[in-house]
Image (tube, one colour):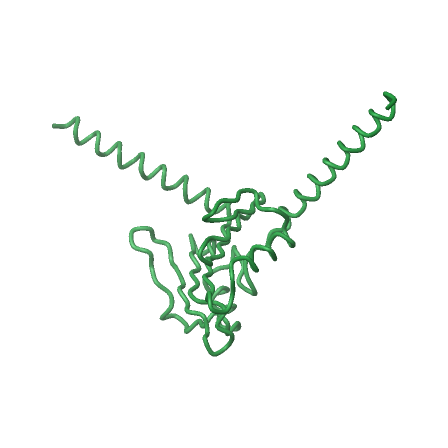
Length: 186
């Protein structure tokens, strides 16, 4: 093989690799912001309205809304509508400062299977960023989507999640400082 042919083939393989990497990255940028009409970033009222319109969630109104102890965050918990299609089992919608930032959906294993969801997500969004026996993770700059075993799909707004984590770190530092002040005062 001549040197120019070898260089040409090497260049061709490099271009194919870069193109496939670019395609994979474009998939991650297009991750969904939620499921059905319920989208990350919605206010509590917007989410309740969307849940009320989609009977598959089985939303029953304000009795499904509660406060998470010690956090000030609110959560909506629904049970899927068995009469409608029975695919959705339990769903949780977690809010921080009136913005929906985590959607957790469990499916009924009698009506849906892990592999079908996994195969569909891979065909739509490319291969997961991480893959383990417990879960698969797809990630963009703003959304993280995981498929967890046995049969849970989770959407996380990464911007809000980072803010919640930072607030938690600040609170923990303050608690430790208060603890140390008390000990120093003994």
